[in-house]
Length: 331
Image (spheres, one colour):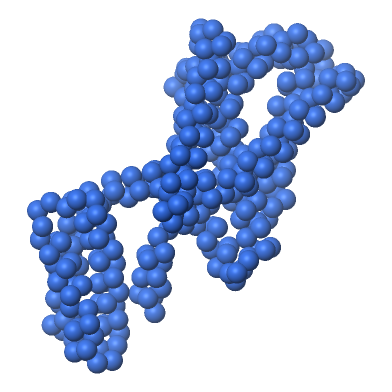
């Protein structure tokens, strides 16, 4: 490689990075540019080290990158900028791009739950095989409602959050196999249908829905999102489209990681509602209203911020330019 020609071709980029590094304040666009140019100059340094090592150029670029790294960490383009980008662009864009997968999953599970409850209500003998009369009495009159108030609210919120994150994580982790996701979702809706049918048969339908809906709308939506993204991960290698199977699976795997991280926050909200709102003394309509508001906020987040982010080219995957720089650096 002709080192002089390479330096001449990229010197303007290095000068611009040096200028950004020396500025006292950076706005949002300049912070983005600083991070982008840092990545590209890091690639230049790697190329020079490999193809045409020159001590003076390597020292100059190393010091420049060190200053730029420190400047990026101290500016709005550092960690907080990454968090803002994730929350306002990357995560909602992933949810929006994959919306038909998780909406379809949600619809299928809701229908399956309704059909199972309807069938169970018409076959009381199944209840007798599942639970003894004493167990049914305990469930209807004590255990179901007591479940939401048997622990301190803060401890219960942590327990619920951990359990739901685990279920969502399993759906994403086993998504590549497809069948385990079906099993996990079936277990979830089967439990809901069995308990719902028993509560309804014994005249406690209002109590059942009044305790399930406040937190359940958002909680089940998050689980269905995880299931839908898991199915998409499975389909990415079955039908990769214009990409190779490896490329398709890698892209959807990175997007699944985005969704997994975002769902931690969504499930934290549903856990707080389940611990503090569901067992509260608020009227049933108010508790359900809180759950409906949380669900509506989530949907507005997806179809508002997510749609706009998708139109700007975000997909939920990591930045394509960053991928290019990593590949170039590895080369």
